[in-house]
Length: 154
Ligand SMILES: Cc1cc2nc3c(=O)[nH]c(=O)nc-3n(C[C@H](O)[C@H](O)[C@H](O)COP(=O)(O)O)c2cc1C
Image (cartoon, rainbow, N blue to C red; front, side, top):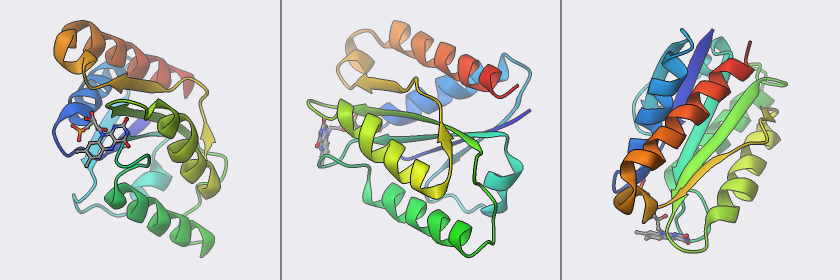
């Protein structure tokens, strides 16, 4: 099973979550690859993966501009038939600071579904204070989510 984690992070919170999700997914024996937006990688990696978890911080009630650009680029590629992603499974994770939880449920999910992905209903969304005041427990929850996501691909 091949799992890909693609994320963006500006101050490290979503990155910590991504790392824990990778650890959890690896516990299932899956081959897991983690890429940060800005890392160079071919989009064929998305097609070769059984499931992709997309993660972003909330920025002005949306995902980061870089994540949005990346997803628009993926959508264009898929529309042109250069990669086939329709019906593939995706997961959503990310962090927010005050009122941004719905962004992950709504915006990020919407962008990914528009590409053709089938998004698993359970998201992994954390508020930044949780990543400071109860880091260990919060990352354990992210690890569990990563494990469940990888398991759901079987
Ligand atoms: C410029 C800026 C805009 C933000 N906009 C929002 C927002 O609209 N809603 C929200 O809930 N949090 C917002 N936040 C808080 C971040 O989403 C939150 O701190 C997040 O955990 C940062 O993730 P990162 O460390 O992975 O970059 C904003 C933070 C910054 C710096």
